[in-house]
Length: 230
Image 1 (cartoon, rainbow, N blue to C red):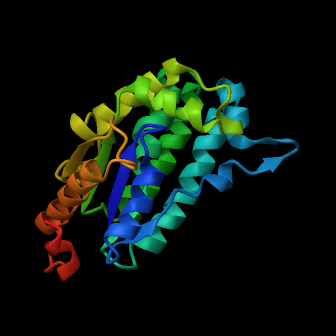
Image 2 (image 1 turned 180 degrees about the vertical axis):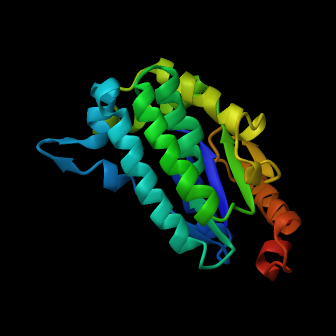
């Protein structure tokens, strides 16, 4: 299993759609945004979080963790040549941790959340073969968020995007406080500030680097279609 990580607006869904078209041997799994963006009583849990993070961070992050753990357990039984969008790891080290650091979670809520994470993840979830980090400048991410104009993201602040960028760097580049089983998981960093969807040359560079990364980290021989793209 490989995991695509990156800030909100980094282009993860677009990246995975192109991966599906370019490297058919990779099984792609998208982040189930609809689960926490379902509108009940006129407002989604995600919208509630952006409107009032201090009230809703613990609820959103706990719900997201349970969904991601369930998905992770199911996917780790499938093809190792699977590439998924976001994970239990960024949910914890980026989003939940950021909520705690900025006092959107109380100390008691953070300790409850951490106990669940420490019980579920190291004991039941196998670490990925690698992370693919779509690195973008926070300003680029924020501009993309505003351009796509999702209803649930209308109240999102630029400062929040800066914070989430910092958490991703700590998690994936500096590996600050990560669990021991993640310390040696390799990370491929792709500069995604430039539009790669409408730039075939840039996309070809990204696809080649992904294929090289998989070839270097996958224990078995890779399918011919992957090696041919290197």
